[in-house]
Image (tube, rainbow, N blue to C red; front, side, top):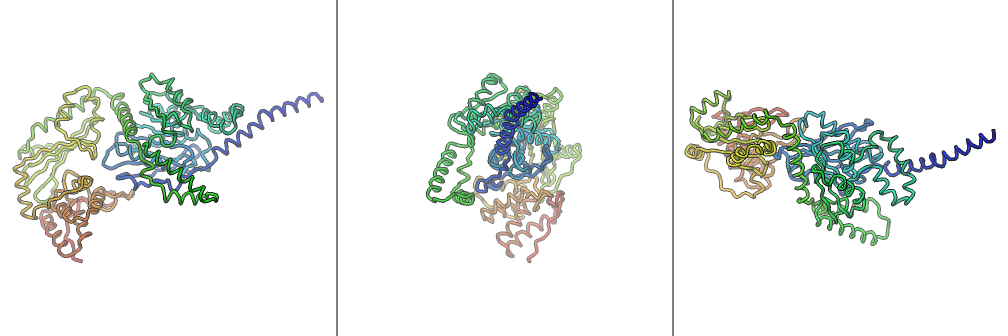
Length: 615
């Protein structure tokens, strides 16, 4: 009996020494490492106003335990969209906010960007991160959310991840094999690899003893997610992968991750590898100047700490960096690298959307619509009978733009291309044709252009590329009729002023002056409270404080632009002379029953010009 009791005691002791005790120690180490919340420092926080033209829209979605995560869609109104890029942020610096510069660059190159705060970070719920596999879980739920959201339907989905996010975007491919492209920057292969690589810095060789316990903890906490790795994700999908890393990275081992990926996939055409040797970990995608500035800033702060001879509090730190940090210098992205990333996404999204699922019917439909548009252009017909026949055939009625000008618009749509044809008439005589094609047409028709170089050559011959919004357009004008129109208008309201606008402001002037642009007059759009583009253009032009600009727009071709011009003139010069000037133009427009489009909540309605009251 005594022997049996002794055996039980020995077994208990062994279980305690080799399982319960080390398991308990491992648990406390794990909890202390991953149980914290992380918030972006106030002095590092970016604001959307720092980025020209960048807009955002807020979303909420739930993750695995019902915790609510906060996300934003970043976009630029005049850049269209080629796909959706989801950003997964790094560990320890707060949520996605510090990646707003990346979102801005991608949005400016034609993408919607969906970026979220992971569990336990910034605006998202969670008492702490919990562990590295939580990054895969949150990204999994983010991808599910965008796939189920009608707003993002049919867009190719691509991923961008840095550090912890780099591990997440590679590993999530085990669950979402239809992702078009992944860019992983300074990423690691698996959670357990990262713990092994970095844990040795704290507990030395003992890390190998505790690894089985850390592994068990993760399997209990995260289930199947604990087993996922980038290598498994790369192997289990056909996704195109770009891997970027610097050999001097002191956070994520270059040898144990990048070199490992390269050894296994270096000869695979799906993979693109970019290696640096002096960019570190956190600021790899910034310029050399930005990193030098950051290093000098850090050195200056160290000197400042020594000079104080007191303990540095978070408040002192925040006050120092708030005063000395130049965000523009500190966060200057490397445009050369970002261009490579954008080109990689462009190629991948085009292949995903237009090659893999391309069929012969789509090819024929695209070719047919281009042939029709080209024939329309070659004909260059502004003859009155042809126009009447066209309007009858298309069942459209011209819209009165004022000053005896009207516009008739109709679409021509293929499978991947949408053209809008605008006919401009002066006293019912055709005087101008403008054809505008949807943004990023070349990417959308890449397969057609590859198959038929003649079509691509003809497209390039006819259409002019607008770099502002990456659109293409064709315009044909009957000069004789245009001269008659301009002469009569100048007789009625006077000649426009000669202007010499700064280059950055020309696009705002054009948006308000020309009738090719469909804009509405108003203050906000629906429940999103977004500012209409026309109002944004007006506000930018008001920066120049030049009344001559708005005097021109007041007699321009765009009905809503005239309303913005009247408002701007009253903003600058609210006097009897200005009111008379506006009313003289409005009287002519009122007689013609000219209307302009007005934003009323989510509804755009036509409104008639009314006289401005003296008071």
